[in-house]
Image (cartoon, rainbow, N blue to C red):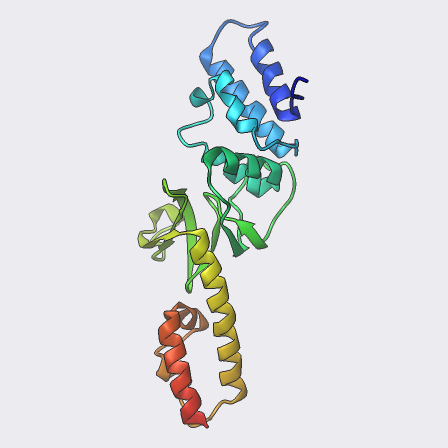
Amino acid sequence: MAKKTSPPTALLELVWANCQSETSHSWERLNTAMRKALALTIGAGFAFTKTDFEGLAKFRHSYWIGADGEWVYSMAVAEGNYSAAAAFEEYMGRPPIIADKVSPAERHDSYAHLSGDRTSERLHVGCSFEWRGERVKVTSFNDKGAAIACSYHPAEGNGEYERKVKRRYAITRELVILDRAERKQRDAITKDLIANKNDKIDYAKAFGVKTMSELRAIPFARFVKIAERLKKQAA
């Protein structure tokens, strides 16, 4: 029994077969049409099968999908088409890295008004989130599937492109899971310190911080060690 063609593949086949039927030949026209057709299937919410991206080779996809195709994944996640995101993950052999309070990548031609941070979301190129007390932005993925994210110094002029990289992180799925557990413990310890606060102790000075962001940036082991010492002093 023949395998049923998925809606995204059916549209791509239609464009591939009919593009330039009434115009002069142009590789640029064909490549642009195929790229926009794929974007349409993602933004319009077509249901993808997990093997859809494996079949793109018959459309000479390397000419129009881009060097790494990360725009596809970013668009799929930002638009909320998770079947497309899962298909891309299957194609790349890359499990999703799901972090907390993620701001999706900006969408210049969005298909729906989906704004604001998401409680949890797949990391993708262009998204931003808090990582160890810093706001970071995902710029790429390495060949091991880790998300490369950068924090930046404040811009000296106007626009984020004038900012200089402060720190660069390689963030894996395992690190995100560990960080989530540590944040939960950190919040519980902080809550306990506040509940049993001793007014004679300068907690900010003890931790060497001025803001909550700086407190969250303290390495977890060091944070626990200081907290245990303060708890004994407050008793």
